[in-house]
Image (cartoon, rainbow, N blue to C red):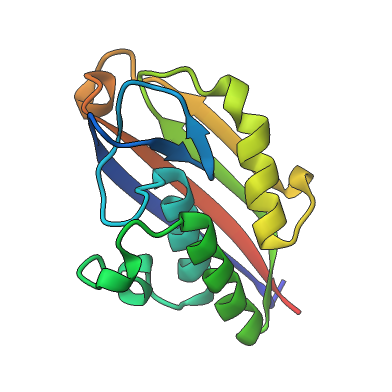
Length: 160
C-alpha cells in the first residue's frame, strides 16, 4: 500500500449565455455555458486538481494560472494531457477516478459515456477506471438555482 495516494478536487463555474457548455470534453447543446478563462470544463478541472493533489503537485491554478493569456480558451483535455505527463515524470499512474457533477440542468446522463471515454483516453486507462455521476441539488444553492455547475473528483494514483 506504500505507493497508493488519493487526492480530492473541487471546481465551480458560473453559467452564462454566449458560452459553450463543455463537460468532460463533450460539447453539450444547451442555452448556457460555463464562464471561465479556459473552456471552463468544471468536471475536468476538478479531476485535474484531484490528480495533482494525490501526487502532491499543487493545483491547476499553480500550473495553469487564469491570468496567463496562454490559457485563454484552452481545451481542458489538453491541460489534462499535461497533468498526466507531470504524473508520469513523477512516477505515478492512475488507479481509478470518481467524479460527481452537480447541475440542476441540463440532464447529463446521455453524455456521460462520451465524457468517460474522453477522460479515459487522455489518462491512458480503460474506461472502467473512470466513473462519472451527475446529480441535482433539488433546487437548493447556486447549482440548484441554475447559476452554476460544480464538480467533485477523487483520484487514486499508484507508484509505477
